[in-house]
Image (cartoon, rainbow, N blue to C red; front, side):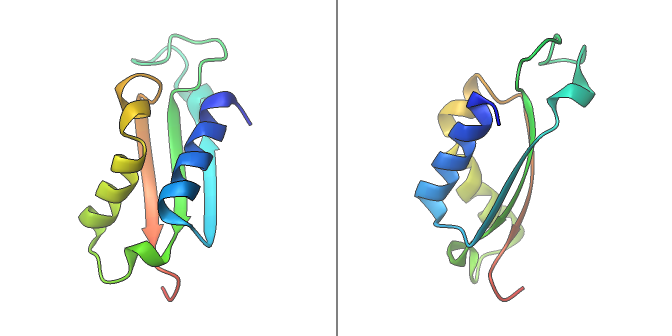
Length: 90
């Protein structure tokens, strides 16, 4: 797991106390595309997050919580982020 992946994991763990968290670095499949000129640069991610913080919130509100936790990283390190956010009973 690379440096940015580890940072994403830490920030989401601190902010959302997830019961499940999976950070997938999908950068290799985007090499040469915008935001990833190639090499070892981590830039494209998918996260699967299950957290009680999502209870009673719609999809957009859940994504806003994730984006808020990763606000600084979305400015520079993260070019693309997709996510699946679920509450524990879903």
